[in-house]
Length: 56
Ligand SMILES: [Zn+2]
Image (cartoon, rainbow, N blue to C red; front, side, top):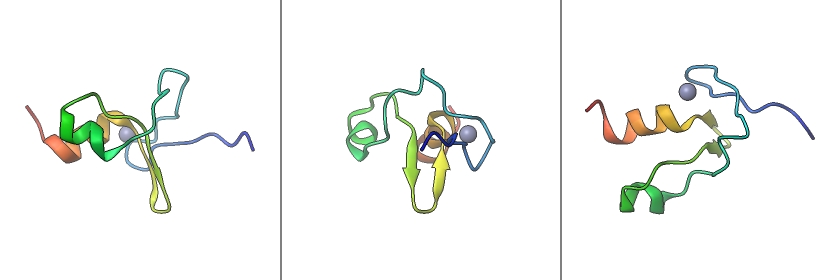
């Protein structure tokens, strides 16, 4: 399977720079968020950050 993963919010494709997968610990510890991939779709780190932390 080499299907491209795409963010379901902004449509951005996952690249090699999106090396890390999202983990709840990242949100708890304030580390950069990874790429979310679940049954309900894909979400890029930028949109995950907006959803979890809001606008600065
Ligand atoms: Zn996105």
